[in-house]
Length: 332
Ligand code: NDP
Image (tube, rainbow, N blue to C red):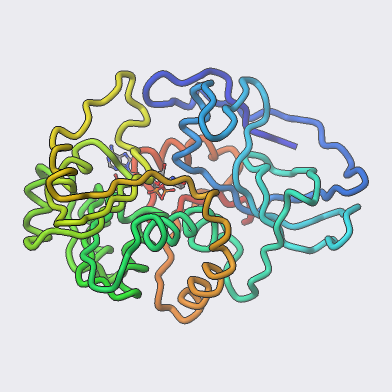
């Protein structure tokens, strides 16, 4: 079977030459293991951090070893209790066509009428990040005005919609193309949105949120964070979820210059890692699953087909070629 390998630690923006698709042997499942044919693979921003060779909150990718990441697939052989051929599962041996793994690392993806790939997006890790990051980390409450960056992506598109469904007074989003901005307002029900490439974020945010904001959900960092701190009202709260504008930087980026407003306005900035919020999963499945089934929450995917295009899908995601969740599909 074929699996992607990281062959060099990328400096700055990764290139296709940093990755190689190689043939690897596939073992038979041992006792307690399952064999899975992967149907959809996830490419996520956090994987950029794993490519640096430094340990963060996840293990770095080892050079010349098969890469890992979220995947959903069909069990083709099982020697584990509770799993049978034909079962659909979510697991972490992505970036490859087939996987053999201990069944303890697989979760059944059996919510019925929700498409399987949703387990990599709206009903998966990015969805839980949005749900937990808004409701738990930012202590969102009804009536809050919420601004989210990366708003047309997997996490951001859900932050904005959950805020709307939970009674935000105003939902504002930023994204990197006019088409994405149109989608935020027309499809996801944001009250206002802007393209951050069209002018300074602070100016565009002031127009979109003339009365300021109560919550900022930060997926981007840098200029966006500084602008948001400037727009936050008394007792404003910020979830520091990601800083994708800096992931390919080769020098540390200068911080927001207006941190003094943190004191003046008693702001709270809190970082998050989605895995600390696993206790929310049952509630998340029930509430967000219900919204997906009823159509109250829109779920976009940009799908790239074929295992050989996985690295390009990852690079495209970093460039913003996705709306909603970037998925690599191995089905026809
Ligand atoms: P997305 O689906 O949002 O894809 C990434 C998007 O980032 C691109 O589509 C692009 O959209 C945008 N982007 C790329 N470069 C820049 C830039 N220089 N400035 C602004 N935007 C940029 O990814 P996810 O929803 O999966 O992740 C969103 C964020 O959440 C990331 O920062 C990620 O690291 C973080 N995250 C954190 C977790 C946690 O536990 N803390 C868990 C999951 C995700 P555009 O066209 O708008 O530029």
